[in-house]
Length: 480
Ligand SMILES: *Cc1c(COP(=O)(O)O)cnc(C)c1O
Image 1 (cartoon, helix red, strand yellow):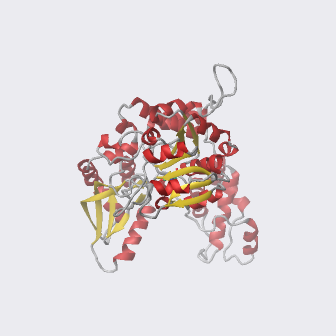
Image 2 (image 1 turned 180 degrees about the horizontal axis):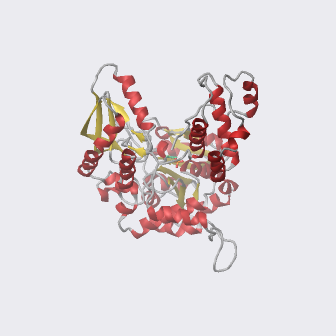
Image 3 (image 1 turned 90 degrees about the horizontal axis):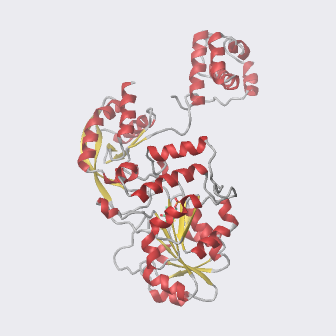
């Protein structure tokens, strides 16, 4: 697979025509090349349109400043056309090897899913299905009904619905429940999530009037009480996913805010962000708040992501009281933010794994990665160290060391997990910066790309996320 191998491959035939006037060598015409047997074979396999575009970009290369002064041979031109074609047909979304040590890495697509979830998605794409069709009555159905019962069982909610992501769930809830009303939130929870999701901006977009209470480090129940007026619509709590407030702090819990909201006829909404469906301490991980905790304590509405700790597809899951979920589902924005059948298939398959409570670590790759022991990861690192050294090339010394991995995507920001990494240290310690950057770029241009990081003048490749399948990909890429 060759990506972006040829600059100027998008050149139009118009600019070719004008550069024809100054061409340094005699080149065959596009039509002539199309008739060469090897090239017409390419046309049969890939279509004339693509091949023609590749011939044009190849000819433009020959005419460019780097082009040869001698006329190139038929074989040389054909081979360049082939290379251009390979880069044209290679997908832009392809597997990369995540050795960053961050398990839920937003820039690398967050959760990966296991075979049973992948199969469910593939089946949903290749067949019709009863996405919004009631097979008993033959009438139109509700797409949420596919996962609602599962979600209610797993979170002990009365009702549930799903939208495109958790940011969408927050926006939709604020629009449906709080538009033209005041929304009360603590100053300590004015969160910004990566990718420019900022709570005050979302409130503005939802036409809510933001009422900040308390201070950055301390907010008390009386702060909320004093802020309530006849214009209030919601009390909101946002989970501090990607930062922590420590030291002299005070925060009001769900158990106080739920009853306060209820007594004043307001909705108490909790944006959990990550949100796990099982107690992570069962697996020796730090505890992450569960939607069921907030609901039991008195929240009327809780939202969380599908592709953070849950380990499923990108989705925003809303669980809560029947009345509040019904108001949300009635809003036109719900239709705008609905999830696709592929996402629905992935979500259902993922939730069924949780519902079974059977072999979760084996069936949920995110959980498997998070719960791998440092010893096991160490063994992986020992196996792949020679492979990574081979990609780095001469001038590096490989060593397996202990390190710390991150959970990522705002889940448990302060927690790290003991792990193991392959370190590649430059033998020549002069000017390490550019040497390391160049080496890291070499890893990124490997097929498949290997993503690591630089720490203390060393390339670090944390092996926590290298499961069997990716290890196989890496091994085969070295043999090739
Ligand atoms: C991650 C996060 C979001 C956004 O979730 P997406 O699914 O990425 O849209 C919203 N709120 C909190 C608290 C988060 O941690």
